[in-house]
Length: 179
Image 1 (tube, one colour):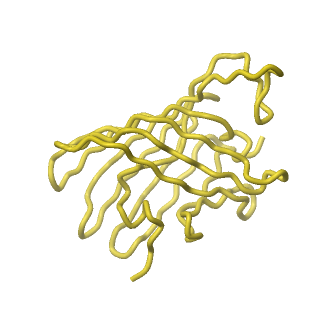
Image 2: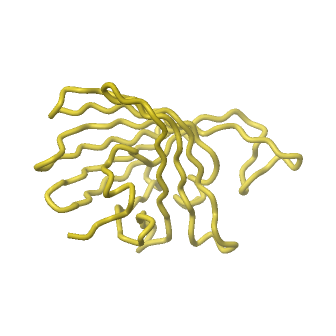
């Protein structure tokens, strides 16, 4: 099974965030979907929506990324404007990559804990950022009259992982990587 095939479907998202600059902590709770955009499965859209609570702030947050086949067995994760974010290959159940945005470095490790649970750890460090985020994605059970959706058996229990950090930065959320 490819990484794209594995990720397809709906996931619950729980993220804990700790900002070393401010000492504040927070959470994101919501849902994410990985949806095929084309019949050949070559492009998958990742949508995440939920509520972020950070310090005194609480409100809605969302983001979108795109996943497409990359080199070898990896997939390329990109922002909505097409800029590359990270490479991801979960065939060995773990993947790490680094994303540099100006002076800020994003070290991201994604681990498949089970077929229905993924953990993603972000360590972000730079002149304006110093935070860690841990995201757990749990595959949601789905049902259809046919018993499958997106090629998965939907009659079994769910719970699993995913991509994402809605507190990456406003520029990343907009996909803005201009100088």
